[in-house]
Length: 424
Image (cartoon, rainbow, N blue to C red; front, side):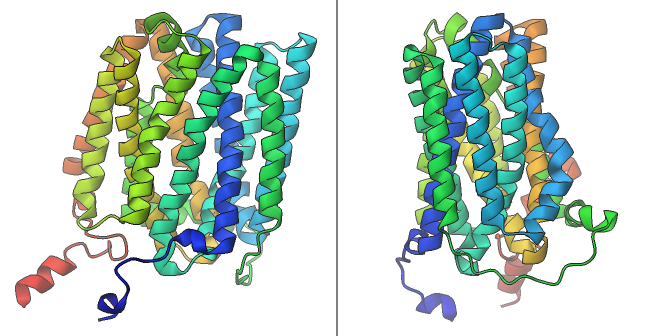
């Protein structure tokens, strides 16, 4: 009955001022990150001319995620999450200053680049799960799925503008890109500073190994969260192609830094369009078939990208990859936040981010290694086929209950609605 009394057009979650400030800060911070990373990737490839060197960027981002997952969750649940985020942004700005000085001074080499990437990866290891755990404190519970879609849209909007802007400004030198990133990270920290979060602090148990591992224990006990997280982990691990984009831009599509920027932006274009659609029209049941459908689509688009020799077709394939991936992200993030008590959201979000970081950063390393062995095009084709195989394996063998997920709010009993319909 309550559902019938709600207005057909709900106000945007951006009408909540704390969430609006949070959303703007997220855009600016991610914008700075992707501007920096596209410039770093091109600069490193120019220095080394090596696919394996590009793969090591992913490894340098992956290592801090693994090492910091436990303290990230602990700190996020015990301390002011906005303070944690803005501290990360200050340290990221400091790392970008090192890049400016190294580039201007002529002493920036691959080792310094990897060191900076480790610092930036460490800050993202803190920032991403902490911001995800903050969302339910900024909007009412029934608005969380739409807020997660807007959260994803902030990330995708920045991924569109950041790589394209970074690639274009690289023409004037990488120091300019890094300097602008410093400014953006500082601006983002100001937004986080003025947010007022209404959060009930629960009594904290003494720090122990059990407390640190509570997030992983929660994920392992919940087959829905475990299944969706591991599905994303292995699907993106095989299907990721981001690390190899400099190779495709220069050697296959024959473009410059601007072409790399467009390729890096293309997945975010598709993801932004889809996330805005989801923010306006939330996902409707059944969720399970949608989840596996977008994973299969992601794998097919990956293969199409690998075989394309025209930049427009390549960008279109990347757009499809981004659109399909964001649906999976919204489903997974919504499930995690709706099923987790607030006093555990930091630790569970950190555990979930480990899956995300593994799939993205370790996937970049895997792509670089395979490309060094068999070439960039075969490596991406193999990855796309692997993604499709993972989706089929999860759906039919390992986690068939995922296909039966009915909706985000009541996914523990996916057959409840069909059963009730049959009895009436």
